Image (cartoon, rainbow, N blue to C red):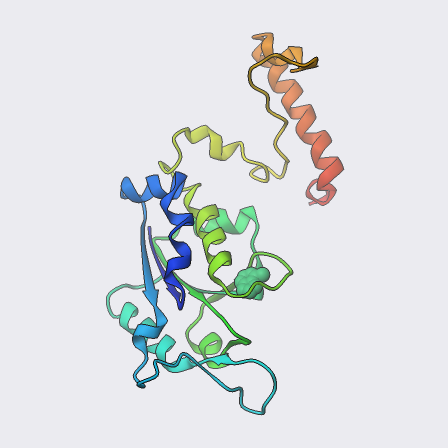
Length: 225
Ligand code: ADE
């Protein structure tokens, strides 16, 4: 999978993309992430990427020209499955959407800033808009990093243990059961005996019961769906 991220702060991705599963997926060649600085596609001497909103009002608006120039440049080389704009009013990111996006061959992720981006970018260039939650971040970069992580970790081969992605919370509309490791007894806080019993059938039964119990308590709407 090829992911092209369009941003005015490419350095913000250094941390999230150089550790753990994303780092390994890049090293294994499972994904290629290209970071593009929108500012490199400006033509004026100040390298402006934003301007005052027509009609007045607070905040600046990200301009169409540099973003369009960059997207056209990329589209000349690659045919993209989706051009995604990270926005607080986009479709809410959930596991099902992440699963669907993990099957794509390539995508552009556009990070906005300031008061927003010129609406014509959304109308004519973007193919889908995604939000990571009903709150407003300072920009789309953190949201793009979250989206990339949820997608990459479920691409076959990205995780060491294939079964582990399938048993994630939300994958089967259930919250994962609690997990324990050594020591068995920590200051009198004991791990459940059934997990040490070696009886696979009983262990699976216990895990399933705990999953349903947790889902009822924490995300009851998943059981309604
Ligand atoms: N940009 C700013 N806030 C955002 C959010 N909640 N989700 C996606 N992109 C955003």
